Length: 148
Image 1 (cartoon, rainbow, N blue to C red):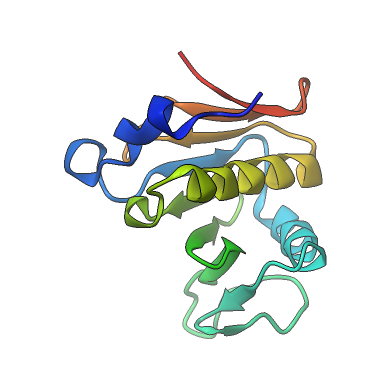
Image 2 (spheres, helix red, strand yellow):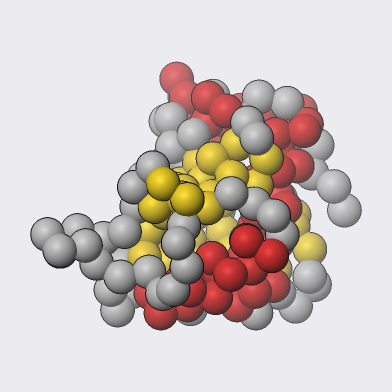
């Protein structure tokens, strides 16, 4: 079932919900990041680390121990910042300023679905600073839907 822009537009209103809706890849671990990056590349989505195309291999900390800054573009106008926290779930955020119509919302939904399928897990998108999803990819149903 397709999520309609008019039904979720308010969650991308940065003046109400914040600028960066948060995403959670449930049950994932940082080592799953390599599998996600591979999936995104197979799909033809640009993947960058620190502003340069991803060179391959597993994501790992930089020399200064900073987490890798992984940027995925499921659509030319939509970017997703992927965070590979050590020993914790993989999280991400999207820039609400980039999500402004059905096409860009569909790109976010594709990202959720492909991420969940790659790791066989649920993926949530929540208002910034919360863990209460307004959109979820559910592995069992293999679909993206609105949350109550």
